[in-house]
Length: 240
Image (cartoon, rainbow, N blue to C red):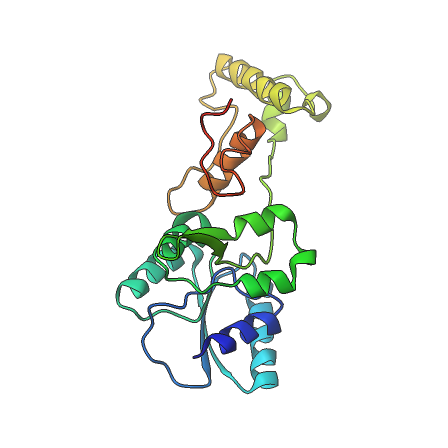
């Protein structure tokens, strides 16, 4: 599979892949595209992916070997594939960027997708553009090695029955961050005083998923750490 075919695949799907792995790879049949895609949270997501690739396959005449993989397993599977030099053409993992993309880009094992980013630059938020850049140690420069296709946010949910048991209502929950966390410390203390073994706040810190990484960056930015890495890629931890 040539580079132009991979890039046309991405462009034809409207920036379809979160990351494209190009090197190393074993030979695959000409006119075929191998794609690994993270399983969606809903069946409709998976169906939309399957239908999109089927339509592109019909439009281009290029056969697509699509495999939908459970999200926590895709990084492990891709790591093993790189080691044996048998990788897919396109990969869409939810958690690749914070865990593996930087390492693969450093080792010169990802396709440079700058032309794809540039062709759609007006559609992207600047943060998404910066987030797709990684450093290639072999070429000694930064470039775009992933293609952003979606964004997300960290959601906070309050368990109303517990808030009410502590003597509060929804209207009492503060709208600013520090006051918000102080409020749930108070809820924590009041419920503990009633004998409930419960915590005011709970967050996912699983090592395999992206939630912990997202949570870390949420608090990093909230407390002034948004410029910890400069646009040049330089680490900026000593500047207060």
